[in-house]
Image (cartoon, rainbow, N blue to C red; front, side, top):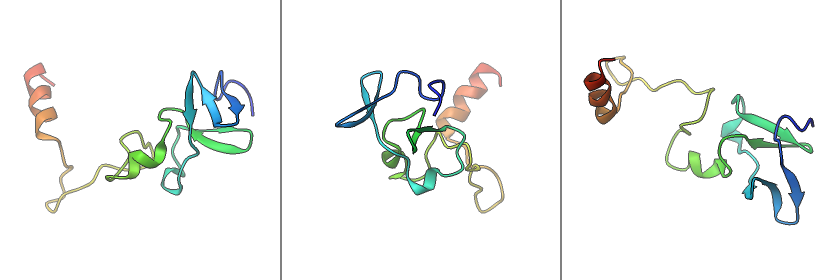
Length: 91
């Protein structure tokens, strides 16, 4: 693996450590995501150190390979709080 993929990462007895944070390998649901980087033959998320936790309550918000969910009427689900903030900013 080139050092450019996970710069500053090193193998320790605890696992792969990058910038003082222990990284955990990606889970099966992460396959296909653009944020996956390889280090010494194992795959890690370059954005979040514990990928399994991001999938625990549903879809990982960093996943680049998952489309937004559609509700029953065929419209994309939007968080109402975020929608009101966007409307206030004029977007």
